[in-house]
Amino acid sequence: MASTAGKVIKCRAAVAWEAGKPLVIEEVEVAPPQAMEVRLKILYTSLCHTDVYFWEAKGQTPVFPRIFGHEAGGVVESVGEGVTDLAPGDHVLPVFTGECKECAHCRSEESNMCDLLRINTDRGVMISDGKTRFSINGKPIYHFVGTSTFSEYTVVHVGCVAKINPLAPLDKVCVLSCGISTGLGATLNVAKPRKGSTVAIFGLGAVGLSAAEGARLAGASRIIGVDLNSRRFEEAKKFGVTDFVNPSEYNKPVQEVLAEMTNGGVDRSVECTGNINAMISAFECVHDGWGVAVLVGVPHKDAVFKTPPVNFLNEKTLKGTFFGNYKPRSDLPSVVEKYMNKELELEKFITHTVSFSEINKAFEYMLTGEGLRCIIRMAD
Ligand code: NAD
Ligand code: ZN
Image (tube, rainbow, N blue to C red; front, side):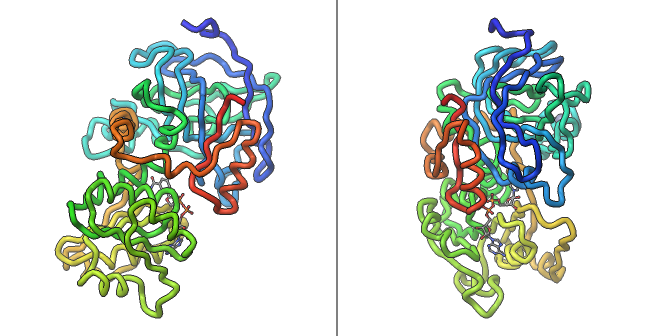
């Protein structure tokens, strides 16, 4: 047992006091984990768009002061009552969505949408007692998606923690907590392209490029990247993308462009933009008879998907996915193994590294669209 077990830990955390204002490194008190919770020492964390959206809080429920962060790697410091499958010293990835292993979804092989621990971006407290585990001079500081990894120590529900190979370098595999697994799983678990097939990827951000990485792993022979921003194409070459289409350079719908390039349509498409028109094109560009389109992007809440139903009669299939259909605790350890046995490449996603005190730089990189992932090293 760590000597800190059962005690309040004082440590550094990057606190968002107000929407859109730079984070401030503060000394916070982190309470011990309660029943079915674990306290983690975070070693590396990275920044994803979701942190930025809720930090900007434009159109989302503002919950402040808050500690953001949900892509991370760390070590278990102590465990609360009832925790049997994790112990101090275990290497883990915290995840923004969970797996209680008891609800109907967790018991179903087909779902990863746990009833108990499914993502809730409005909740800033722990589910067991409705309280925070973070405070400054007794004043509560709220959690974010149950992970709050922009802190040297954090408390997480045991169902949101994947135990991984202790030999895996946490400064690399931390990116598997969210975006990279989402895109990878969208292709490998949902689109399931056959060897030698043609896959179109709409949107070449971190999620789309990880979907492309999935297509490469599945042995696709042609990977067509579709993006409105031609600057994304150079980077995409590193991810095995073979062809590029910028829809703004054509005066016809991109689905027609793709049909002409592929003799009738692509075998699979994965949409990673969040744009409703891209979603419709991603569906309509698949081949009749066998084509499958997978939606990953999060659309505007008022968006409506419109397509002639005859597309379905012509045997085009439309699917969607949440977190690449991975069950966090059961499946993430094997994704880490794919990296360990050199199938999956993660280095190419990591374009920046900063120390914890420079965390606001990671926000600047994301806001200016520079690079893919910025790793934040907790130790200075
Ligand atoms: P990103 O902003 O880095 O990349 C999106 C890319 O799409 C950009 O390069 C942009 O130029 C391109 N794009 C936008 N509109 C387009 C259009 N109409 N046609 C072609 N390209 C277009 O974003 P990201 O971090 O890679 O995330 C992608 C999407 O995945 C987001 O909507 C995000 O919210 C979503 N997401 C979903 C899940 C899930 O579980 N379903 C998980 C994480 C992220
Ligand atoms: Zn569950």
